[in-house]
Image 1 (tube, rainbow, N blue to C red):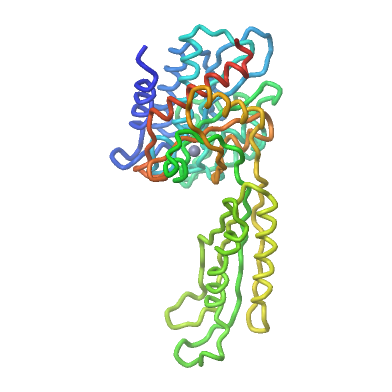
Image 2 (image 1 turned 120 degrees about the horizontal axis):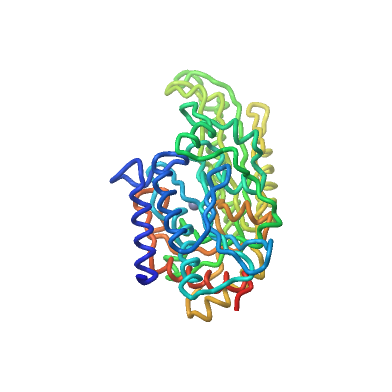
Length: 409
Ligand SMILES: [Zn+2]
């Protein structure tokens, strides 16, 4: 067998070819032709590495190395293999490939675990075809029900069931898994941010996947003629919104510890060049690894909003989404750090600012997650790149961790 890093590069490069937009990044939507091609490759490799392959009723792929214990729960290792439109070759596949190569090391070293090891390749994490995202992990854990799954359609009106059948998958197979069949879940993912590269540290041990909340704020004023309304007679919804938005960064900075706040969407009504804005609707997205920080920023946001409510301007904030931060399993986190030290791989603790399948699994089983550096912190674009050497490092760490978790040694 070729060396580990060369095999990783081969997997990443091969999977990267299964794109609907050659020359313009990876576009691999769930249940597409490219999904089928990537799926066939992954299944072939899983079999080559001695794993028993099966797919579930969502199209998630599982490659299992049996353990010596009967009916024992599995240690799952993997990530997703779909992509956003014109994304990169690493977001998702890096973690699937890492899982594959951990299994390869089990095979090479002829290790017989007590608990089974399962390499998993998950569908539709990005939600680029059917929306929502995290569909594979939500389906396995039962957060996405059979009925809700069936109702989902893509932008052309094709249902999940039709799309699955189109590439030869069987939607009648079971979807939800009994949590008792899962012992732990390990996921490698690219950082998708600049921290590890800037610090020049090859491994990030994820402590927490940040919690987030989203608000929709509506500011209502009075429309009027842009030429004839004197400045002191205006109730300009956009000017009020702009003043508020300009103060948001400080709310997060005061809180610190990586707390972030973003307004990414803003709509102005009636949106005419010569009309004073009557209404303005914008979003606020607040994220932090600690729930108290999220709560504090929410309180300050509400105070700020209240201070802009006058006789002429009405401001209303509606909470749209609230998700608690998800802590990774402390024992696995400690193991990942200890193993990194033993392997003389520098590491640091890091929080994940993005949601991942690991976040979904963390409510059902013990989860551990590693990050590797992203070049220039970029992802969800063709320029997305990570060093195969870093993936190989993570494979070594997960190999040792998986040996412990599966009761080998
Ligand atoms: Zn991802």
